[in-house]
Each structure stands twice: as C-alpha cells, then as structure tokens.
Amino acid sequence: MLEKKLRRLGQDHIAKLLESGAGFVSRSEIEKDLEEINVSLFQELMEGRHLYQEPALVRVKPVPVVPASFSASPEAGRYRAHGEDLLRKGRVAALVVAGGQGSRLGIDAPKGVVEVTPVSGKSLFQLHAEKVLALSKKYGRAVPLFVMTSRANDADTRAFFARHSFFGLDPEEVFFFVQGMLPSITPEGRLVLSRGGGLFMNPDGHGGTLAALRRSGCLDAMRAKGIEEIFYFQVDNPLVAMCDPLFIGLHNLKGARMSSKVVRKRDFDEKVGVIAEVDGKTRVVEYSDMSDDMRYAVDERGNMLYWAGNGAIHMIRRDFVESLTGSGLRLPFHKAEKGIPALDSQGNPVEIPGIKFETFIFDALPMAEKTATLEVLRDREFAPVKNRTGEDSLETSRAMQSELHKSWLKDLGVEVSGRSLIEISPLAALEKEDLAARAQSLPAKIEKDMYIE
Image (cartoon, rainbow, N blue to C red; front, side, top):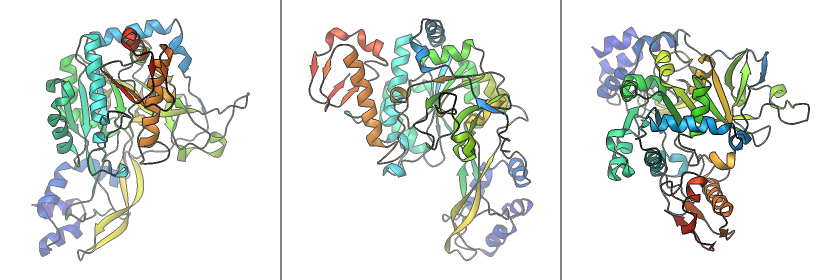
C-alpha cells in the first residue's frame, strides 16, 4: 500500500494527504515517482552517507597536461594511428549527454533540437549525428551512438530522431537511455509535493550517466559489440571533435581508465572547474571550491598556474564504468540548496528552500588508477551553447564555427571575405585534412555565405 511505503520512508505528511483524499495530490504520480527511487540509496543519503567530501586543498599542484602543440609533433602520429585503428576495429562508441531542455535558449524542447550551425541551421542533434556518420564512413565501421535523455525529454528526443530518419545513421546503432531521478527534500528531510501533484524530482546529474548505462542495459550492449572505449561529450558543444583519434590513442596507449580534454581558461575569474592534482590524484576542482590563493596562483613567469579548464569531454574505458557501477563503489553525491516550486499542505503554490542531490562524472577521475589530460584549443573544439546572448551563446558559437571553417579554407589557399559565414558539413570534412582531399573542387574565392556539403 502506498501510504505504508511512504510511512516506512518517514514521509507521514504525504501519506496523511493521500488518506484525506486531498484533490491536489496525485496517487498515480507519486506511485510512478516512488518506483524511480532507489529506496536504500535515498535512505542512505538521508543518513548523510555517500556525500561528497570536499578535499583539503593542501597538497595541490597542476596536473601534467599534454599541450595542444603536441598534435602537430611527429610523435603524435603514433597515437593518432592507434586511435584510428581502434575506430576501424569497432572498439569505440560515442556517448552524448542530452537530458537538458532548451528553455534558456527560448525553446520548449530538448536542447539538442536547437538550430546551431551558422548557415544551414542544423540542430545540435543533426550535427553530432552527421559527425558520427562521417566517422563511420571514414573508418569503415559503424560507431554506435548512445544518447542519454531525461524523463522530461526522452519521448521528444526519440521522436525527433525518428522524424529525421536518424540523420542517416542506422537506427540499430543508436541507443537511447534515460538519466536517473532523485527526489528533492526539505532541510528537515521531508519529500516535497510538486505542483503537478507528484513528488518534486530532479535529475541525478551527469555523473548519473554511468549508473544509467548499467541500469538500461547499454553497458551490456557495448560489451556485446566489443566496445572498449567510450567518447563522452555534452550535447551543447557543436565544435566537439567527435571521437578524435589522437585523444583515443593517447588515452588507450597510456593505459588510462579515464581521460580529459581541457581548454586554457580565458582569465583567472572564468567560472569553470580546473583539472589539478590533489593528494596525488587527478580531479576537477570546481571554481566555487578554489581559494583565492589557488585561483590567482601564477608560475615563475607570472602566467596562470591553474589554467586547465574542464571541457566536459572525456574518454572512459567501458570496464572502468563496469567497475564503478557493479560494486559498492559509487560516485559521491553533491548537495545543492535551491528554491523549489511546490505545494503546501493546503495545495497552494509556494516556493520553499530545498536540497537536491546530484553526481558529477568528473568525480570518477580520482578513482581511475591512470588518467591522461590533453589540451585543445578553444577556438577549434569548444564553443558551448548555454545562453541566448553574450558569452557562450548561440551567437558566439555560430561565429566560432564559421571562423574555424574559414581557417580551413584559407589554409588551403581559398580567399574568403571577412563578412562571409562559412559552414562545412561533417559529411564533407570532419577536419581540415579531409577538406584538403577535395581541394580541387573548392572555389578560389568566396564572397558570400556558403554551405559546403
């Protein structure tokens, strides 16, 4: 009985509302919400277990970083060739975290449907799917695409892919799985009624990707396909170098369990976490956790010491994910205080102080025996779309995409007007070297906006 289950969880206040027949409480919604809750985990969180403990930032130093200039070195060829070999053998999968909505960008739909490219107006989903398709054609082996959705956008995301015929991908090579949910609570540990009559639930953070892979059966599917390495990225970055062979090879040949791409911080005060070495382990130190001494530290030349900004792009071994999700080891949960839109005991809409729990995927870094960190240039691989205007916006991202593609053309001898917007389809070229192979078909001069496909 639902009321008994609630009482066992110490939530008598909701059980009483159900027993009283309060019309603003939905029995079906609460039953559905409770089915999603890992009861034992929830109770342990209420007891203060599995919570993130901020490390004492005493023994901290910059993490060893392979510089961006390495990609042009002779030694890089060995790593790139190895990454390409893993792609040809079907050992790599792409995983995009796409549980968010595009509300901050002005649409009531999954963020992945936002039209992001500068000329053709392709959606993020189409752009990423075409990169995966181009990779599959380039290396002669399908690269499976795993898409993590959320309860809020799963149906819409699946429908969007189906409506667009999976953007040319084989539907059998696209796997959708849903992020986990956790209830928010009051500071006193009481579950909160949402304005829809159910429990107020929140996604369990991008760290929930790992548990969701196991729970959904996607880890089993990866193992069955012979996938050894997972390329992880977030949906809002249209410049991501999908399954970059250099990154794959560097990570794999160094025996890393989890690796990261970093970009150089714009300045000391950019609000981004940095990858550092803390107590001998690689970890992300969030901007809010950095002391001024750490944030403004400089090296002997006066340059920023902790500059390695987390780009939310990782390589993760499949067996590492299995070890993290198949035993008592789990990512720690971060507590965040927030205002929650709720219903009071009379059914009136109110906003109350509450607590949500979430995990961050980068907290797996210190659990990895070995890691690798590769610097990439921001203007080539990192242009996230987080805002409608200003920094990290649609406007800045489109401009960065165009400038990158202009640079490819200029390096190949094409004269491009400064006012022109340029977009090169991933199906035409994933990188400048792909475009060089068709240099003879390129115009000598471009004076207007152009889409190259």
